[in-house]
Length: 141
Image 1: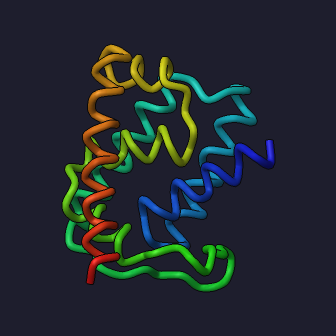
Image 2: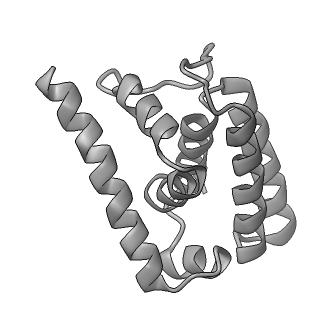
């Protein structure tokens, strides 16, 4: 459970870029898992929609709000992540974050987002290419 909790904590922090909001969502997730015993398609859909609403309301957020509870690795490039978050559609950003950060299994994520696994893989590939270009641009400068 601790491993899963760390993945979700990082997911919420990287999506919200705001410590208090991330902690609140993590607590809500823990309550759901305690009640239902698992992360299911319905929960993924609910999280996805909640995060999309947040991102649409905070589409120009260009900074982090961190206090003390989250520790981000010292080599983490927050500038590249924020640029990726701003330049990528909320749908692709969340899909990528759910898969690579929260580590939602491919079949569960595809089912939750009403797409085939092939469609999911294609979009994830495009997303990684976009993020890679942002990183390369930062390295070059």
